[in-house]
Image 1 (cartoon, helix red, strand yellow):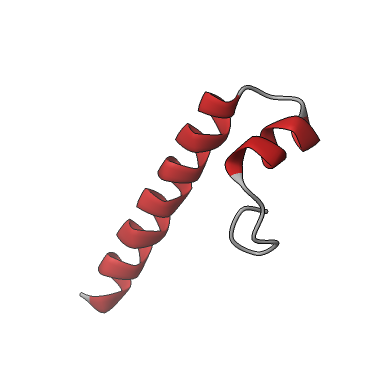
Image 2: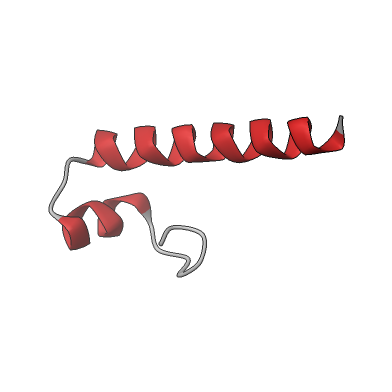
Length: 43
C-alpha cells in the first residue's frame, strides 16, 4: 500500500490498525526479500 497507493507509513498503520513500527519493519523485510529474490534470479 505504501508504494502502490503512495500512502504515508502512518496512514497505512491507521488503515490496518497496527503500530507504525510494524508497518516499517514489514516494509523493510518485504524489500529485503525482493532484493534477495532479484539477486538470486540473476545468478
